[in-house]
Image 1 (cartoon, rainbow, N blue to C red):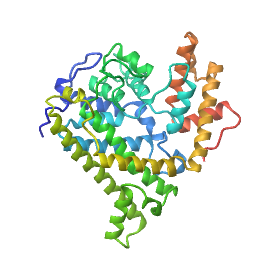
Image 2 (cartoon, rainbow, N blue to C red):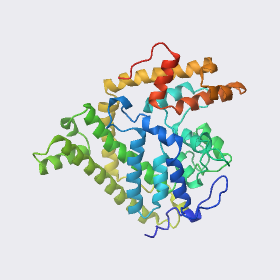
Image 3 (cartoon, rainbow, N blue to C red):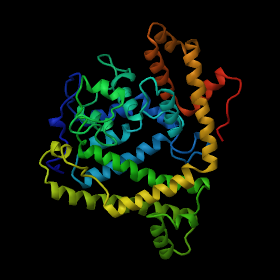
Image 4 (spheres, rainbow, N blue to C red):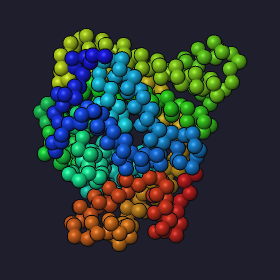
Amino acid sequence: MSLAPYASDPQMSRGRLIAEKPSPTRSDFQRDRDRVIHSTAFRRLKHKTQVFLYHEGDHYRTRLTHSLEVAQVARSLARGLNLNEDLAEALALAHDLGHPPFGHTGEEALARLMADHGGFDHNAQSLKIVTALEQRYADFDGLNLTWETLEGLVKHNGPLMDADGAGTVPAGIAEYAAKHDLWLSTHASAEAQVATIADDIAYNAHDIDDGLRAGLIDLDLLQDMPIAGSVLAEVVGRYPNLERSRIIHEVLRRVLTWMIEDVFTETETRMVALTPRSADDIRRASRPVVAFTESMLNDEAGLKAKLFAHVYRHPRILAVRANADQIVDDLFNRYSADPAALPAQYQEMAVDCDERTRVRLICDFIAGMTDRFAVQEHRRLFANTPELR
């Protein structure tokens, strides 16, 4: 299959910060994807919360299974749009590497605790992992990914600055971009935009599934949700005697299909209007080119609002989040007050550094923890550890 002229071509990549010989069997974007998959940070996603903690059950999404679902949607979109599937997949697999334990609770806790020390942002943490914290290779720290993959990681939520250089850029991204310009004022490649919207599509569908599985929502409530309600009515109308588990699966697969096909419709319209001839034309466009239609965007916002109210803000979830927040807070404050409480390898790194560097080291350590390791560390250091249930 020939790629669109505005697709990212690995032969035209802006390369890696540290030059490497090309592989005789894999493109640069394939190598990026493979390096992400083989990284320690990627394996840790297996035991990092998406919404429900690891002990809730074997079938709830984790950050790892979420990332795999995002990658599947991203590849489908990239293939249909004649984009580079390998770059889209690499970005989808890497987009959550920087998330700390306990989902958004962990991120919010670290952002609060690091407010006076440069802040915390999971996209900046993803960048730090793949450029510094993964220490596997003889010639460099990090994974030495291509410019296109790094650009897509930091612009997961869009440009970080406007054309005049105004904007709030997380400290970690600004520091890295000072030595490796990632064009922070432009949009990312079409493949990166695909990975971003695939993230939205995947979590909208699987949070419905997990919410139903957990009993936080039921099919009656689903009837009142944008997108899902219409699909549910269609499924029940066509299969009036279908068992509940099959109804749920049929709803989810149709929700995914509807949203993916909507992206194809809107993206093709925007491509015709823009007539891009290169990947940089996509970057310099005045708006994203991979997008939902306006009607789907409104419906998706309504669906998210319902999920926020009935799943993410459910009293059961909030109780767990409060206890998870305490664990992160306790660990951070204990390590800060007593660096000797850190594991030996971190103690060595914390000995001869200034306070800002030491606090960032502690933040990196906690951000890299899985849920269960954070609980294990808390039990090691404190007499009473909150129950996450």
